[in-house]
Length: 101
Image 1: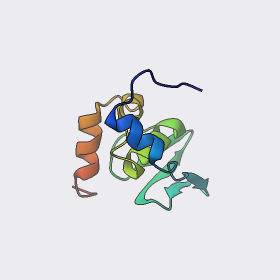
Image 2 (image 1 turned 120 degrees about the vertical axis):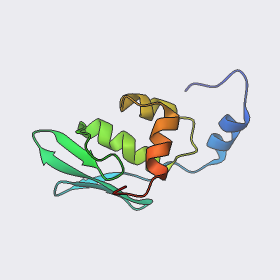
Image 3 (image 1 turned 30 degrees about the horizontal axis):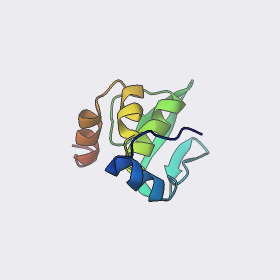
């Protein structure tokens, strides 16, 4: 267990918050009950997330993208975004855009 030496507002909020809802993979689709965003398998280990069109991602990257959609205010967004080759601001900007824009 990693206990922080200092407790920021974000750490307190995270400690009090419930866990992030699960991301499920079934029949080539990746979904979560906590968001309408989704990812689809393109075969050969490639995934496309609806709010990141044109990007072919690994399954782990697609999961990170969905986690951003599920919990955009969490401190982990920076780490999840980095897995996508994006900054947190870029990932949240894509998430805020209408899908298909």
